[in-house]
Figure 1 (spheres, rainbow, N blue to C red):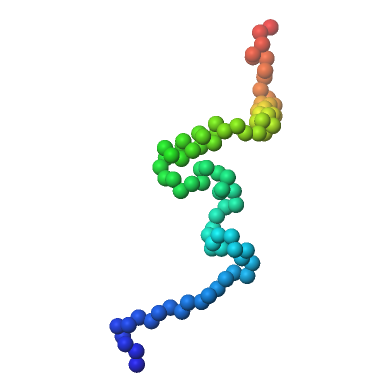
Figure 2: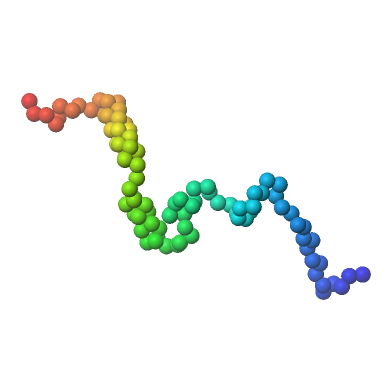
Length: 94
């Protein structure tokens, strides 16, 4: 008979995942782009998060991406104005 005051110990198994390559912990869940983002840190506080986001905006990015974004925004605005039948003659005096 067992001692009622003594708790049973859990079994421990020596398990290693089948496709584990040996880099870091296989059980750590992390996004693959976290190492490139500064806003993914565990720093808490609204001021710290805001300053990290502003620092990311100040960094020089891809200039082609900015031009592409501006063109897309202009096309969407012009498409919206065309759909609502906006009259551009109010800006010109005749």
